[in-house]
Length: 289
Image 1 (cartoon, rainbow, N blue to C red):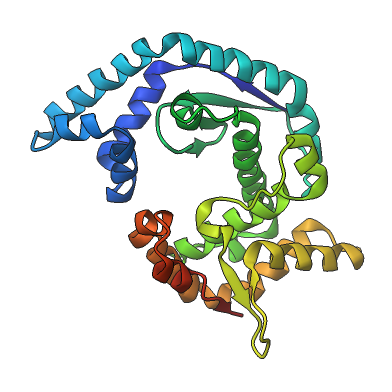
Image 2 (tube, rainbow, N blue to C red):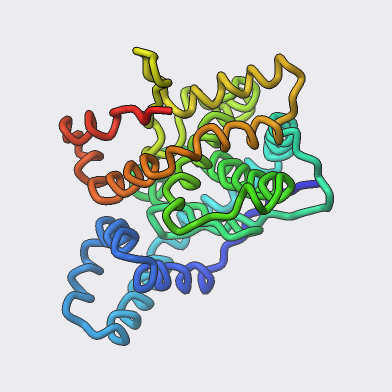
């Protein structure tokens, strides 16, 4: 049986934020500081030791200032998970033909990061959109999204080490593939209905990531291409593992193109999100397969 619970853990979250801020790389550092501009000014030109102490105090103040709102979100999140997580997990398992081999409890920890990292069995649930933008509670979407990655990794292990041996140059391929796969799974109608939202397209970097078959004049998002190929396998009576093995073998020869797309996104993410049309058009040029 799979289960999801939510647990507030301020110490663990602040430790995570400091790791992401000081050891996570420039891209993650900029993503954090773009939301916390006063912190960016406070740590400017400071030594690492000084900056870490400033960041620690800064986020403790944030937790203290917003304690009531955060506790309300945690309570609301518990109710959402109790009411709906079991049905969503069961549907995800069904879609992936996943064989549950042991009981597992996934822990969702609220975070003040502007994104939601994961490290099995823990998923971090970003509070940013709820606290600062007033949007709906996305805990169930985030939890199912990340858990789909955990199940995907298990499936890769079942397929075999020769398939999943990952070279550094392949990071972009695996990252974009798993995000497009999750975008496809969570936009399957049955799961969409259970999650109570429509039109999910995955993380921004795969929303319009496209592929095009050699000799074809038409391009298609990677998400929808995966859906087409999965449906082909279902019609032929094949299992999800077989689909994963075949589609990886089909797409992996284009690993350099996927790596280039990933690098392009990392370099230009902020401008793309500001609707720079030239960069958007360049990113949406399809990968030939």
